[in-house]
Amino acid sequence: MRIGPYEIAPRVILAPMAGVTDKPFRVLCKQLGAGLCVSEMTTSDPRFWHTAKSRHRMDHDGEPAPISVQIAGTVPEVMAEAARYNVDHGAQIIDINMGCPAKKVCNAWAGSALMRDEALVARILEAVVDAVDVPVTLKIRTGWAADQRNALTIARIAEAAGIAALTVHGRTRDQQYTGVAEYDTIAAIKSSLAIPVIANGDIDSPGKAARVLAYTGCDAVMVGRAAQGRPWIFREIAHYLATGENLAAPTLAEVRDVLLGHLEHLHAFYGESSGVRIARKHLGWYAKDRPEHSDEQRAAFRAVVNRAEDATSQLQLTRQYFDALVAGVAPDLRTAA
Ligand SMILES: Cc1cc2nc3c(=O)[nH]c(=O)nc-3n(C[C@H](O)[C@H](O)[C@H](O)COP(=O)(O)O)c2cc1C
Image (cartoon, rainbow, N blue to C red; front, side):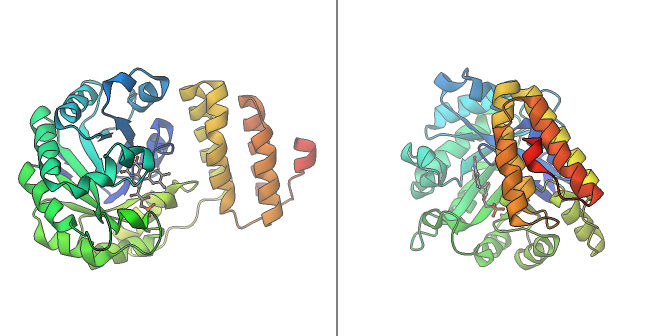
């Protein structure tokens, strides 16, 4: 699949997730097989561009190409300026967020709320496409509510405005994350457009990715929540799409090394104090799906690791836990604390 000059291969993309898809996570997912990783959304309001949060979100130093940066906002000229600013700071693809149901975004009439105003959508897309020389992509839901499913109309507006690829999350805004993704709507959109369409929603295994691609006819799939604590899902999906075979799960030693590398990158990127805090949610996700140990042990691991206040002890406790798993013994988390 192509987005402007970029060949996106394999056809599996990391979804933008605020608070999750920061640079350390994007770099990791790319290394582990994602064809493209989309940044957390960045605000289009210039008053917030110099906060620590925005500076981290706009930092793409050393990130592998193509660098896709998501912007959110409501005013066409402001969105255009935000797109220019991000391109000046390394963005090679601009993605526009009209898919996020978060209150903070929707109260400001951004994210998926924008889909209710089709004329404004057209003005925003045209303004952003005109403002930059890089490809502009759009991410939408199927509509605002069950009786307001206007994704196909928005998709046609997007294509006419020069959008280079469209991602559709198969839910309406009022569904938030409940219900099941409607792949029928995504298939209908794909069959009506000439630009690449990316299917998103509930893709959590290589088999599901292949089924969604076949059912919708889409050009690629986008994976969000299933990548949390499981960044190797991208190579698993890529391998399955290429061969029809399942790749072996990563060994515990590899999981340990991936996780320790991820923690080190978080500590270096955010600084020790914020890095340790931000790492905690990732630690919880990595521990969540380990079948080797009991729920009690996983809960104990989270509790102990959450107490680590500095980078050294967070790394040490994590290593200790996974070393014990690798050796096939129960980790003694009481003494580790
Ligand atoms: C924690 C979290 C943060 C998210 N932040 C964004 C965001 O910033 N921009 C956006 O377009 N979608 C955002 N989403 C929606 C995801 O990109 C994706 O559309 C959704 O999770 C469905 O895909 P999944 O079923 O693979 O998780 C977020 C989702 C989650 C769970």
